[in-house]
Length: 82
Ligand code: SF4
Figure 1 (cartoon, rainbow, N blue to C red):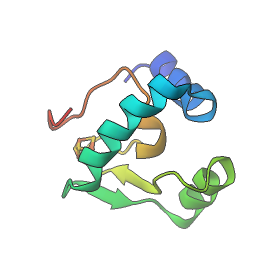
Figure 2: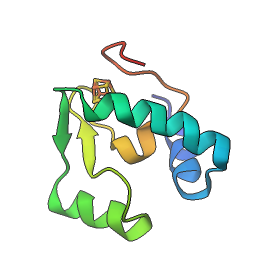
Figure 3: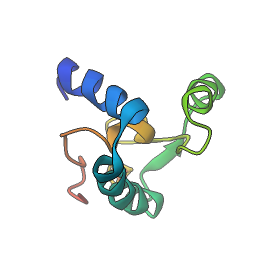
Figure 4: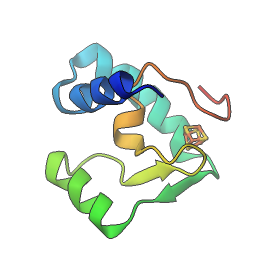
């Protein structure tokens, strides 16, 4: 994922509109059932909870991206699940 895509996904994580949230929810539901998701470090969980305590505190075990922001990116699932 390019740096600009990463920055945009974090921006949308914080400022998403209803349409962005709906798209992200579809993706996070797929990630929730994925065996490749892994729990973030305690520090990572702290950061995510500080921004939005209802967001996922898991990351993708394949690309290592936090799922809370990854699901808002224009990127794709590295396993082809979305
Ligand atoms: S992005 Fe893809 S591989 Fe990573 S946790 Fe989500 S569904 Fe699994």
